[in-house]
Image (tube, rainbow, N blue to C red):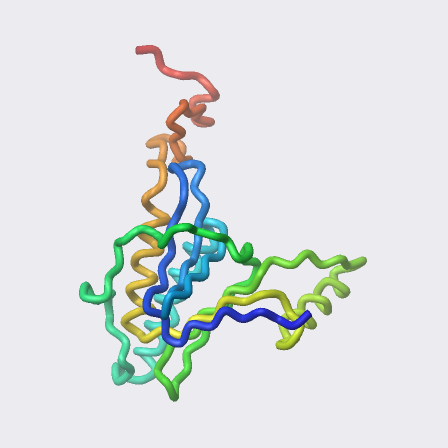
Length: 196
């Protein structure tokens, strides 16, 4: 079966968002353009890592070009997007592998999110070889979301993604684990709760 690539070059909208209540949220990347909407599910840690790496890559582009690249230092307010995800949110796939690149000729950030694939391997060497074959197979690999963003769009995406990640449950002041609305058993208190 040939690879399905959801290409947005450029998207009208590319955001990270959630569905559900804090503590039970499902995270999504959502791209849309010309009436098409593609939503892919991923883990909270993946959203955070993607946002951080986008900012780092953009900072490196600015550094290497001596500030000549069309990349703002911070997310511009005119492209910020605080609207909820477009509904209905229909998951195309769950993200396994992500990749980032900067296209110097087009001055665009390329974000790729590839579907999670389970690999059977007898050893670490077999697993590494299977992963490499999977990443190199452009025609028959798993589904992929590929988005090409301007520097301003990429900064705005990273800011919103970090805001979404940080909008979850507040941390416990003692152990820094997330506080659960139904109650929190803090390991620093050895499981005891203070009386009222």
